[in-house]
Length: 390
Image 1 (spheres, rainbow, N blue to C red):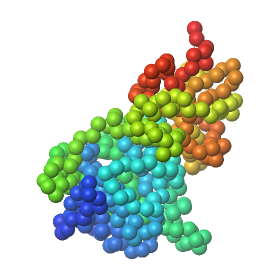
Image 2: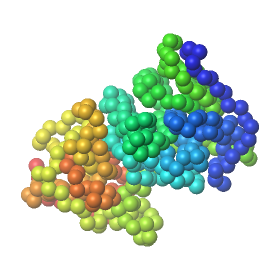
Image 3: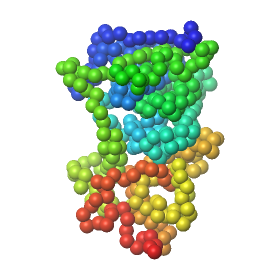
Image 4: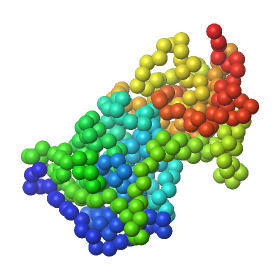
């Protein structure tokens, strides 16, 4: 690992509780404080959080974000978990700039990202190369806008700390992806969350570095928080499918004012079914299927009643053609009228952000079944006689 690597084991000293609903172990608190306050002001820390599933990565990331906001006015957050993203619907990779603390770190919340890419799947397994290219593009944007020293200081651009949250796939190809991410990002701090099942953990030490590497990184090993202050278990295995559906439901709930009385999934399904859609000329839209190929004769069938990424083809995040264009949000293709040459799209994205959209990205993110089952409708997102039938 080389003598340049700083090894750090955090020992318990005290406990902080950011909200009444979560218990933060003393070791987690000391780790966060050391990342935020032990480093010099410039450049700010880049903290990379990794570890097995159900080890507390996201909870620690949220907590660290709040502690960073005690020192910095804004903090960048690179979300690389397409299955369980923090601030966006599933299938998205995003760079977020956060300017206020989250009062309750147990509740995920949706935010409009600084930059977003629609990967279109809940795992990197189907296309690891594209996944990595997208992450590298987001990180490049962060460095150019928020981390470059000297030159950007002269332009008055701020330098922001960065938290990188990662998925819990740490074996096989998942491990290889993490190694590539660590080499590319070169974080100042790597926090490895460890669980009691040692065989499921990442290797100890700076496993991604060559022995003769001269880089300097602070390594912090943390045990998963298994109990709260009352010795109750707090790491409950999540229903990943349910969590994804709830994120999608929450995202499209934004189509309506927050004070509109929608309290049940049934009410939301009816509201979406009756929501006037945007009418989008088919001639103005290109369609790109991610991770698969679709016959041209099946394009319209493949889009009807699906979730698509709304992107701008002229705005590539990098020069690489392997990387998808920036995505402004998601939409539901409610129907397609071939005779009128029109897509009907439901989306919470404001009109000012939609005006340049000229690309639909179709992946494997599905509309939750509970939103499709509206009494009196064949489907709330498909109209009869819209598509030609055999």
